Image (cartoon, rainbow, N blue to C red; front, side, top):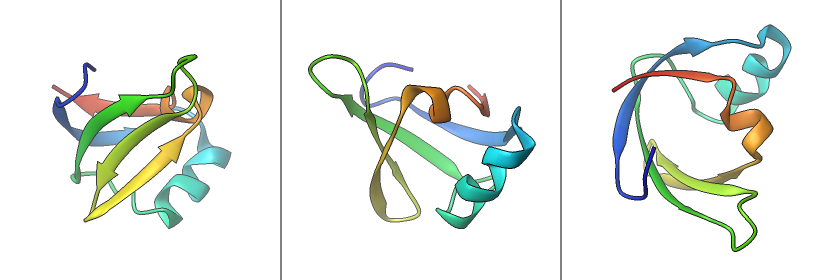
Amino acid sequence: MKPGESAVISGFTDEQLSVKLLEMGFLPGSVVRFNFKAPFGDPVCVHISGFDLSLRLEEASTIIIFD
C-alpha cells in the first residue's frame, strides 16, 4: 500500500501473531489506512478503528487485505 491508501482486512497468515493483531483492533472486515513509514522503512504507521498504530513490517506483512 502507498501512503493514504485504505483497504479492508480479510485475515492473517500467521496464527500466533494474529492474536496480538486482533487485540490491537485489526479485525477482519475493518478498514485500515496506511499513513507513512519510518525514514528507514520500518516500522510503519497505520490508522485503524480511530487509532494510529505502529507495526513492524514483519507484523504488517501477515495481514491479508482486500484492495
